[in-house]
Image (cartoon, rainbow, N blue to C red):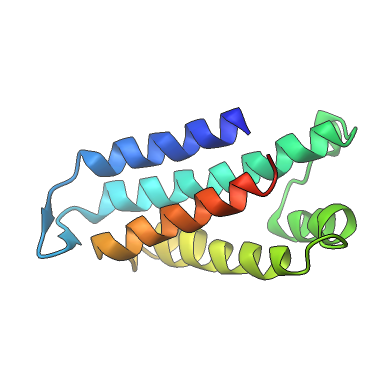
Length: 124
């Protein structure tokens, strides 16, 4: 999970460069970038785990729907909560945070990164 954790650290590094006023980031653009990078960290963790299971690079998922399928096939059998966590992180990090830019509160962003790290560690 080395590469996934590196992505997550990149997200933190981006956030550390942004000013915070009253628990809100003053510039949303780098927050969106950081949350997008955190989402990519999650995908990278899944990719790394799939490669360890014997899949080739060409067989790795290319869409969120394909990620859902491989999670169900290779991982959810052992951990039913994993799919709910993936969906929550997808909706929070990718949709609300990166795509729509709805998350500006610093404490929420930090909680999101913590949840991403916990999810990634499940693949390590």
